[in-house]
Image 1 (cartoon, rainbow, N blue to C red):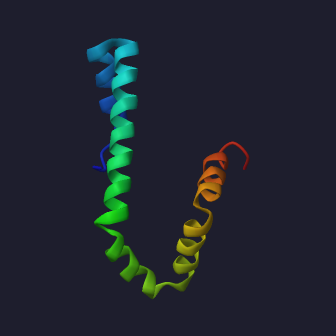
Image 2: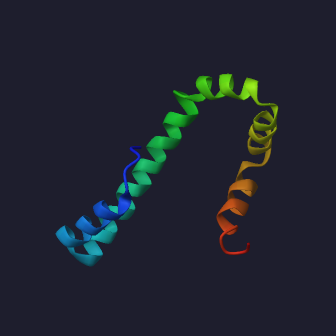
Image 3: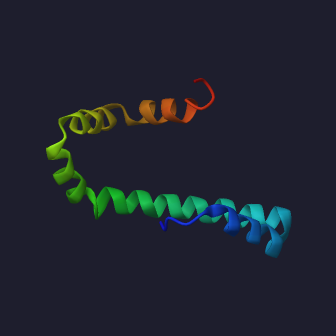
Length: 84
């Protein structure tokens, strides 16, 4: 949710809780933060994003494509670092 570097928090979790405990804490907290950010973006900030989209027709097309085939687009985005 906050734009802060994750490396110091990850390293401190490993130091405080050990390797396995720190990994568990980091994975759990990162998943919760991603879910909360997604919910905020889909509900509270959706109106703001829609007003921004009115000014840029290319972004409207991207938003429509994500609405129609979001899973496939997100899968391809996740695979893009593996297959350039």
